[in-house]
Image (cartoon, rainbow, N blue to C red; front, side, top):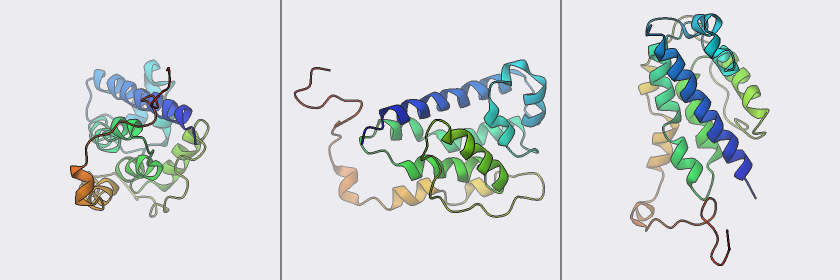
Length: 173
């Protein structure tokens, strides 16, 4: 399966997340609500995914959650085997925990470019009644579960670069 275009779209989305984070932090208001700044600031108008976030999420909380949700993406997007569930589940767990409606809206946004994104993941528990805390993000995440499941021999194996983005042996590209 050629998933190069999906990887490209996910990498572009990661860049959009980082750009939105940069715009939010430049406002110099870590306690401000992301939803409010997204309405006020022209620089944030192109980031429709911000509307899916919990209404009580602050810029500081968004910063921490984005870092946790996306830190594995560069490595995963360069792996020869794309772990689709890991890419989506870290975002679901770290950025949308307790925000079922927001997750559904975010997945719909993402599936416009990457059809499989978020498909097959378990439902999020009911929406959180009020503000969010980072305590939930400190629980065992999907990342920890996937890392813990890797056999020890896999960790000691040499890093072979096969498949995308590395050319196949004998290719001229």
